[in-house]
Image (cartoon, rainbow, N blue to C red; front, side):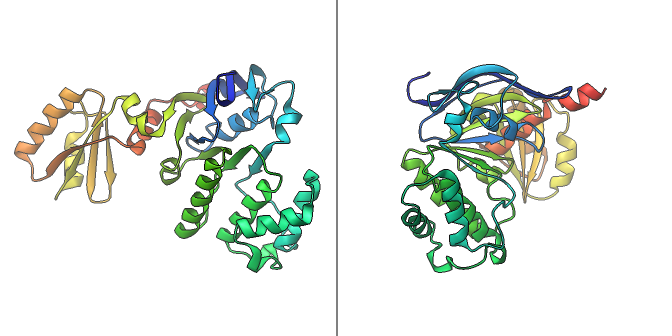
Length: 312
């Protein structure tokens, strides 16, 4: 196992029937990291994470999670994992306290009542402890779900699309809590296709149709992809977008509100194209660092849908 790594696996593969859902996946996750698994719906993110955490047996591959073998010691891994699903899965006809007490019983938590009270305080749920879960808003349900998957003090936390359907303030509060847990040494795996969640992660791996395209520190991903991005502002952006298509150095064009982001991997060819349009057009151009979203769009454009391939 790599020094300091909580997860260190190679060649993880999973099929469902004749569909190859995860294809020879390798990853090393440092202790206390927030690691984002980014990709479109159906790309294999959740299946990959579940294999890493011992929740799903791989068809091939090897490695360790929390010091245990992912193939032979899955039960030991699961005891130390907290899993927050995308869909609220607690009992809506029980109160917040009753739900937490039930989950604590399931895990055999010692000094259960004291631990439930502590969880209510930590997640700022104490004032609502007797409220039925079914009457909670999306943000409060999310907070309850997080408290439930932390009740047994897991070392590894799995979050599957954790902030889908909640308001912006609830999302900020949620991520504040996740960063607090990370500072305490809890390792967190996040499955998402939202860019505003991806930027919260320390590391990111891009997955498309079962294959890992790239991974690394979040801040380094655009550089690793090799993208250069220019931003155009001003009038007639729709016409500019049409005119830029197919020009030398232009690999992708993306509209971001009142700006156009023009990206490519051949920096000199792209700069020459921009220079020509800058001389003849009405827009203002500026060079800017490529972001995660530009990198995501670029990588997805070159990915091949394995399901579509199998069906062809």
